[in-house]
Length: 580
Image (tube, rainbow, N blue to C red; front, side, top):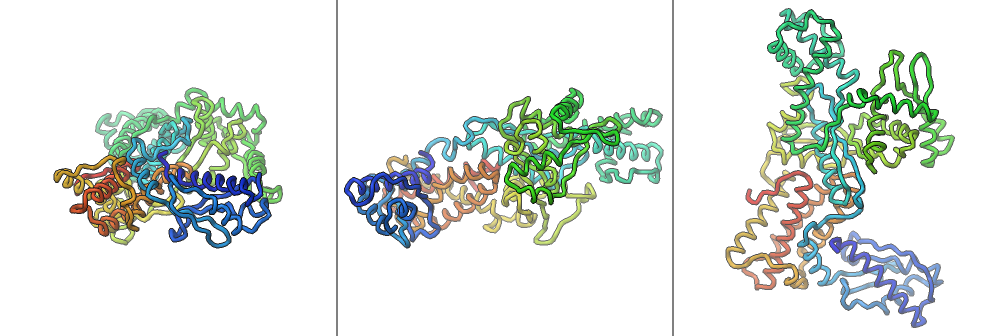
């Protein structure tokens, strides 16, 4: 079993149950009791490596004091051949198990196996991770940069936990934002054609320099051809011209950032194929819409009440909520963005057959989450359980501790391509994934380029490079990395060695936890901890020059750390350099 943490837990439960049955057969404990005990890992290893609550959990069923039960269990435990070499009774009756050499040796064997860390929780089910999905109306900014690495790393983690993963970018190439985009380009284009910067510009238009550049490129290509065209035709051409240039730039920026998608899905496809109208029609058929003031509304209030009551809220709690309905089709016949979003997610579930959908959204979209889930519930698609929204907090950009607010190029926010001119892709990906999505990130440009232990990505990469150098030197001296089966695990006896092996053993659990909690930052924290444990081990435990069997054991341990560091950095999309 590659998950040696779970293997040890399972063995504690099995050993304890067997000891109970032996004690019952001997007449020391009452037979036939069903005891539901927990097996935990104590924070303080002086309390053992694993603690079973069997004695306390069984006190009522066995009609005995927990410590008396614990003593009977200990008296009938058979540890020979197990992962454990000692059991003690502690406190009110905890059974504290201490790991022995067999477990430490098998961790090295598990870490040596191909695919170490992989899980089966997904069981081949289909999951879509949709992330970034920025409006194609301008350069991608810092929030997109964070969402990019969160989504990409989460996709990697879910794949390692047994899911069949699909990565998607939803392109909002229709609706109000694109109309505003077209009007902004058209206004700048008119200023260029007439050589008059005082010509009116939309109050809510996009002010960035990138809009001026698009207008200038259009003028250089087409001259003043669009000035005399009907405005509606001109705006269509402006939008197409801008999208045809912006979307490839977005793809290039994300590719440079190490992100490639299985599909870029266009919002316009939903409209062109009648899927938005069809979805709204289904909601109407199911009785969830009504007409008012010429518009078609979704009974979001009713859907949310049904959702919240099903989740356990009381009627009184629901009645106090400020719930509002949503327009699906305006009086002018145009469908809203919300209608398109419902249709898009219906397409994910009903047409493309995803079992689970995970979206990475900015925290400012929090009010949209329950409404979309409830709308999917109304379509019979169980959005409350099958649609997971990871809300992402803001990024604070710093330079040596001082805020950086403006981009010289766009005039608004730091663009992704500007950022990647300042720091490496490795640093950007590591820093943006360093905290859970629910926590704001302070991204310090000065720290990200430092080459010392204060820079977390450098700290982890340096540990990997340090081990590579060690392995190469020892191999040149006739000491290749041995197979785990030939290593004597009992020789790894110092506190530093045991701590390092225990940390190595956690890798599969960290991957599973990151997938389960939709929190890929767990991988960063784990790698930083593993690198720290290695540096402590390397300072305390000599390898070169030791007696052959101890050298081999420590060399194998170091190389196992190297493999897991490379494995974990790969999940983050960060390189694992052999030299630094």
